[in-house]
Length: 209
Image 1 (tube, rainbow, N blue to C red):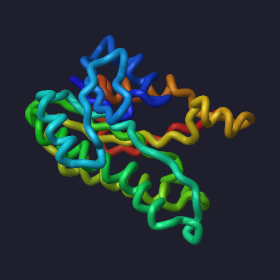
Image 2 (image 1 turned 90 degrees about the horizontal axis):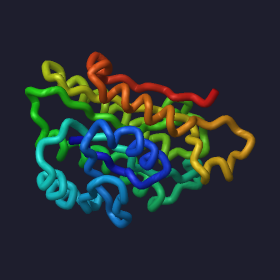
Image 3 (image 1 turned 45 degrees about the vertical axis):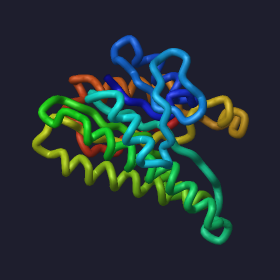
């Protein structure tokens, strides 16, 4: 069983499409229930809601955390509200989902924790300070988690794609090279497989070519 957040988004839809024949997927959703896999309602901003949802599912093989959000803004332009929102969407939601999933995982069995970070955490280009800080902290969270999981068969990794080829991004960046969603999903699928068992604590860049 595999818990997936953000399953109904652009990337989430492709990830579910590639994984649903191989894994029993349970999607945590807030408002839009998935149509192709089992959904369990949970508010990622509410730890108690996530805890109750995860515990109702049973012991999963792992977690694929796709949920997140983006907002632009320099330090001077970023409001308190935007700063808090970016940290909540991109860092705190992952922390809570990981913590509650780990609480019910079998530490004696193989397992996977995978999150979607961003290439912005590598390039650190100005213009989206709250988002970049949140994704950078998410990377540190994964690196620490991987060390805490030493001695188990559970791995923790982060994918850091640059701009994804979603309809929204294609509309904003019609002439730019974007990362195909199917390639991100294929990388996730590899990390989830037995072939990915020796990859742990990695921050994997996925760059448009």
